[in-house]
Image 1 (cartoon, rainbow, N blue to C red):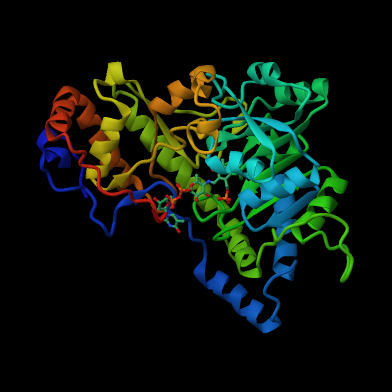
Image 2: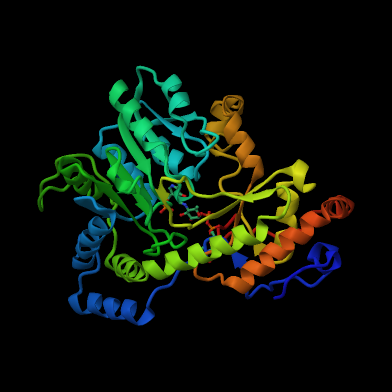
Length: 417
Ligand code: T4K
């Protein structure tokens, strides 16, 4: 791995790829905390023979999460997706929920799976989160809630969404999958709305392999969420509502607790990488690294590059081809937008026309590898590759067009086709 300063060093021009199969860079490489501490906790699980169902580690995790998030109630769940569903059921949602299309498809699927219709509102050009004014236009008698997404950990216009929710009698849910470790206006990010749902998936800043949590200031809502999470059981033989299996296992809680203990290190690595990307790319024309809202305390978990095709002389997808050829698996999270995915696309193929900001952003964004698996040397290689590709933008475009076949290797996603 070295810096790429000359055009012909780029893999698209025949140079050796910067990273091979074994050391390729990914967006979402897991942060691993103290292994010995994790294994010690797992050993305790075996000793106790309590593997799941609201075990002691899950309870300990819920207490620690509540402290970290500065909320009185946290309910650990099996995934962020299940967390959104448990939240929706605990709030009694039905009908329609207004949400952005610019999010991971799980946000929409979680609702649709319950028979609740996601209605996509455009994002605000500055925050790239649900635009409260556009959301207000979409409220109908069927609307029950607003679902804001703290995209890439950057906070929604929480105050404006709270006002809208109160004015129109709606519930307010935040998808905070990306936002652990974030604050807004000096307050914990979970202290807004009715409930916030976090993901502790392997790719997140704090991870439990798979997992998530609801955070809320509402004791009754938390109690209902606990029932829904566990089939609706209120006692050994008493089921009081429709529920599901949304429980977090003890081994996941062991991982989350261990991960939490290293949170400061993970955040420091994110901050360091973000700073290095931003500095190195500041003078590259046509690309910009997204910063935080001045009111936000940010976890820097995602490094988001915006590519202006005209100024960079290179499109986002061409830059993606250049990076993938180097073994740098940048991602287009969350291209092409929920509205262009099924079942939403078939239901409303023209939705994109009502989402101009979303469409513009989805055509320009590119997420770069970061996290504790990425160090300064890797960032230098990525940024020098971007700089050299942009410096030779026209030649890169011609070379890619000449090859006709994209040099992008098969998808690096671990997802099976
Ligand atoms: N809301 C939002 C806004 C979300 O972003 C998400 C999840 C959710 C809700 C739902 O939360 P969960 O139900 O998942 O808890 C990944 C994650 O699977 C997903 O959790 C996450 N958002 C999303 C942003 O990213 P994919 O389909 O892109 O994953 P995949 O398999 O391509 O993995 C990403 C990269 O990470 C790979 O290139 C390699 C690397 N990786 C991944 C895993 C799992 C590793 O190196 N090791 C690993 O163990 O969705």
